[in-house]
Image 1: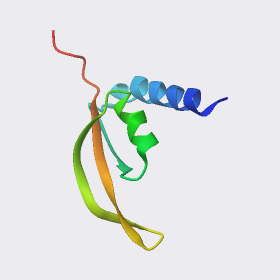
Image 2: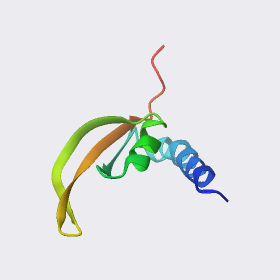
Image 3: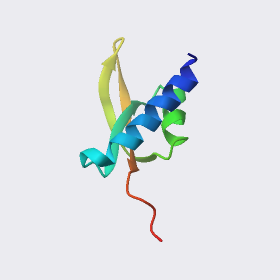
Length: 77
């Protein structure tokens, strides 16, 4: 299975299962140097809500973490 399809299936399964377990929102973080990862989350309805500056040490340098969230509540209306 190709990676984009795998990720799409994982996102779909998570969005389907989470509300039944009581979740109303998904909050996660993506390393700031992971452009493809951030695009994947933003493309699935997540929005940037903050940055954790110099949050993780990678190969001797600090990298920011971008905080993203997506509501699982149905849209109003």
